[in-house]
Amino acid sequence: MGAYQCEKRHWLSVFEPERATKLTDAELERMAQGTHVTELARKRWPNGVLIEGKNSLEAVELTRQALSAGATVIFEAAFLVGGLFARVDVLERMGRRNRYRVIEVKSSLDLKPEKHIPDIAFQVHVVQQSGLDVTDAAVLTLNREFRCGDDLKDLFDEGWVTNEGRTKDVRQVWKRVRKALPEVKEAIARARAVEARSTAPDIEVGRHCRTPNECPYLAHCEASRHIWHVSRLPRIKKQQEAELREAGVHTFDALPDSFDLSPLQRRFVRAECEGVPYVGERLAEVLEGIAYPLAFIDFEAVQPGLPVFRETQPYERIPFQWSAHILSHPDAEPKHLEFLADEGSDPRFGFAGTLREAIADAATLCYYSSYEPDTIRGLAQAGIPHAGPMVDLMAERGLDLLDVVRDHLYLPEFRGRFSIKTVLPALAPGFGYSDLQIQGGDHAQLVFARMIRGEIEDVAATRTALLDYCCRDTEAMVIVFRALRRLAGLNPE
Ligand code: SF4
Image (tube, rainbow, N blue to C red):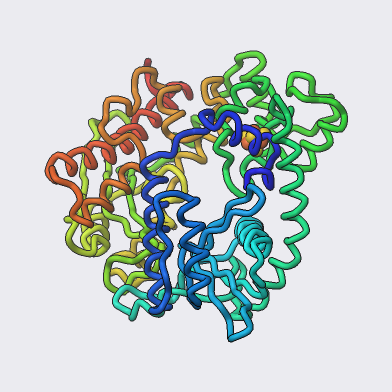
């Protein structure tokens, strides 16, 4: 229920749902994966009754009939009470005393209390209001010890699982849900009050827009936010934001002198308010210190919730593709090398073996963000041959180009962002990704996952599109690197 996060969100979802950002194909794919996981979880209860129905009302009626017929386990049980509708992944009758347990299936490894408990508490509230005696709740999450090839009955963990650790104490879930029930009632009351309004509540964009989930109306709300709103200050702390709000300061052109700006925030404010770019004094020194051959590398990987390659675990990162552009000296023509796995077998072995050979002679390994070293570390932990030595190579010769940009450059066109897709066109107008069939990492992952499942008809064309995309990433790094050198006065225009 959106009112948990923000009353404006709830108002928009009722009266102007068309303002929500449309889900991407990659997000739809993740949702489909979640549905598949829920279906697999049903195998734990062979006698369960699945509620389908053409619409919500029919599902509610079928649920009523299943309960009357004495069903002990119902999948997708539907309830509608006082305008509140809830659907329960698994409703289980416990013992003979007509007590029920609500079970939520999550396709994640951890239970995220701030996100999941309110959802379950809402379901419990609605089912209780329908007259059933709900006295327990549980969550099934994916078992991180599960490995592809194990018995599917071991795919799930039941109980209280968090990022910090796990406990099999299932009572923790019910304890938290019970504690959250009064908040559900308050949220429902707030939602009803908001529904009586003819206009959306005046709520500014803030941290709450991304917690516990990114609000689907974020783009809509940001469009009406002042262009210099303080919430756009990079890495502004919660406390600082609250203090400024309290002092009535809403835009960063009006910051008091006493406000302690970090160097990055200072560059950001100058670039935004005065259009002044920043080129750090040490940029030339940093770039001159780079050893050659210099290899720019970029990877693509999938992370299937349901592992598909033998011995892999849920959400294990499986790199399937790399691209490298190698410069023998700053002005040399880059040499391009690449690898894209066959979709039929575990890609990690070919990935690691070919990459190690390609980068063996590089004196500097340049990547953009920690994704590449993290991926190699993951391969080494999984015992993939050649990955261990590459961890050492990365430690000795690695250079994060993102750090170089972030620490030594700021252009007004960055608008507070440093992704390669923002930095590239800002530094080299005319260059970008818009001419490519695949234009983002999410899309590349989705396409490769579909190739693994045999859902792609024109495999040859799709492989070309994947190669083009990954190649563009390392090409972009070369362009950014050379633009940095020009700005530092090291390369002629
Ligand atoms: S983007 Fe933020 S302010 Fe706007 S509706 Fe969503 S949560 Fe509320």
